[in-house]
Image 1 (cartoon, rainbow, N blue to C red):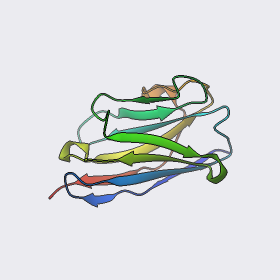
Image 2: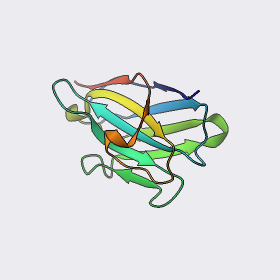
Image 3: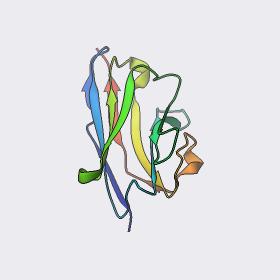
Image 4: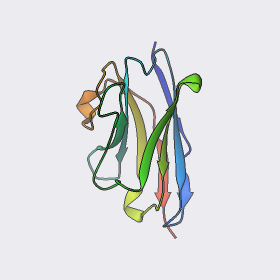
Length: 124
């Protein structure tokens, strides 16, 4: 059974950094893609970044390119989203999602397995 848990959210000032963690069980990154999504109040869920076992290994939304990076630790069954130079518009609930696929995508319908989310608030 697939299980996904996000952590690492919190309150941070503009320009600050956070690292989100997505700890998973029941599958491996050898044959599953992981996506990070976010949803702000009143807005649709937006794909932020993803990683898959085949190229391109990682994708990023234009709004976070150059600021966010994605990495994985297979030994810890964890995928990280490092978020730097955070802006107020990055405020949202961030979700980790997984799907059995070699290539990752940034559309929510690409994924069937979701975590519960972690809140990120960027405010002074």
